[in-house]
Image 1: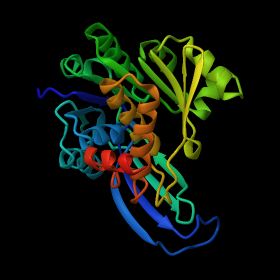
Image 2: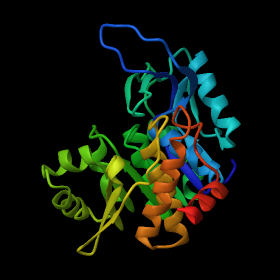
Image 3: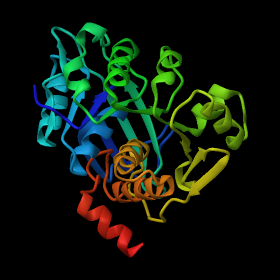
Length: 299
């Protein structure tokens, strides 16, 4: 099996995206533009790793339907290894339907997991995990993810946890995170603290090397040894914000391998997120490393 520096494990889907003049409720609007592309938090994060120059592979589950075939095809087109993907015969794959508001770039998403059973520990390629530099998880497929993070801990692989949504199995995964960056909703919901600074202090007690949260257009915040490190978002007019958080997590972890400067990691992540907003969908706008470096030189 191919060795990959970045291994993502989690949710993957086939996304149908429409850019609209407004998101309608009990009314109709004409679509401005439309695209179909792969989606899912960990899946998009893994594509970002490949775009940014890392060898990347994904561990996830699909059905043998047309959506599943397209998910795998999209990965292959991005040079993401699919050797460790699990295809469930006679089952359906996850799909999502996304409406993006053209004036603001904000979105509404309706999704289905399909009927493919989630990853079991026996489905996970521990060989692929053991040789990685980064294992990225999103909280989905928790039984399989738990087997993977245990192997990663044993082998000294950096575990990057995108804590976006509270779901079953997350509690068992959290202690294995080296980089734990949560959404505002997760940070507040998990800790019961409305104040984000207080929430990060509580999350830091889990024991990750890095604890932080993403805050959308307000940037990100990391709590480090009693100090809060804040980094604003770059001001751009977004076409679509889908996937901004996903690519931030990848960029932060990649830069963390290169430098332990947390503000620099946040700034690099902010640049990748800003550039991603240029195009419709979670993946189309993901930049190359050269584009990010050029952007940061000018901003």
